[in-house]
Image 1 (tube, rainbow, N blue to C red):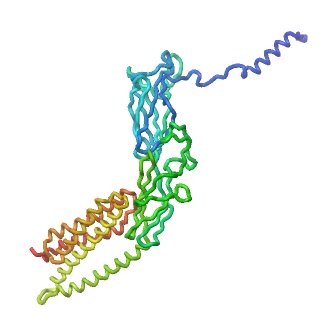
Image 2 (tube, rainbow, N blue to C red):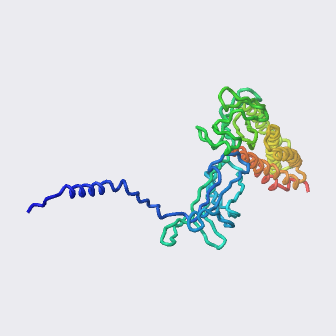
Image 3 (cartoon, helix red, strand yellow):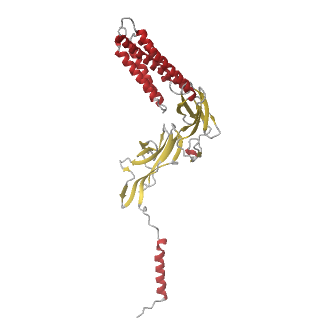
Length: 422
């Protein structure tokens, strides 16, 4: 028997089928986070990114509130929040333990080096000893995360100086051009709200235009190329040491050093060095002939010659100390903090020369040995420390040669102590 369908039943059937088809649109979507909430929230009260200069204190403000449960929306008083401090270049910088007081807590922070530092709340401990982290907890059948936090990032920036060109073809003169930019800013610059920058700027360019630049104490001029500064200074030495000082209103001043060969001066110094070597080489046989006395054995004359060579080496290392002392004095006048090297280098020359004269006369061996040690310390330790403090290339060949000469001088003088008058 064939089933007869009435118009009413067909309408009901079609209506049901239509409702089933459009039910995904009409019914509210199920959200996986619907039953997941955060018990506590710690977030900044202001913007989450700031920009300033190194060395400046910046004040950060966070608030801690209950965000789930019966106390939702109320501040969390007298809790202790752990804030992780992490730098982009320095990595983990430790953590801070801060009291929320009445729910809002404020603290200051500063960085002495250029770095992009992020402050992230990682734990909140209430007065009753409960600890809240980002771990998942369950309460009354509902899932809830322990802590929701928002980080704050601060750029502590500084000037970055790069060498563009140097002209050393003129005697006793060096012309230098440098490019000055901000170290951390990207090439395209950075846009921030005015209240979040060091000088209420909304756009921060990479280039540092209009800043004060001094090269070896001489005020540099900004050239047609934006952020390129040029100046000329004087130097008497075969190596030019250049100090670029950059400053700007409200910013921490910086000093950046460079070193390179001064070609025009290098030629004259090479001739002078060759002349000294020739004179020393000619003096040795002359001294050996003059020191031979009638009736004196060849071995005794040879020992006297070795003592004389020790004195010559001591004199040579003393001259090296004079070189470093004079160079440091010139650099100090150009802004380098090398006054101690200048003073010790010049003093070492005086003491070493005195010791060398005593060695030639073979008198006062104790003073001569002491005189050997001073140039050794100056030419090795003091020079290495002074140059290394500015991250410059240390001339190790020159320094090690002077060190070897000092050691040889000490060995020769102390080994033939019978040549010295008692």
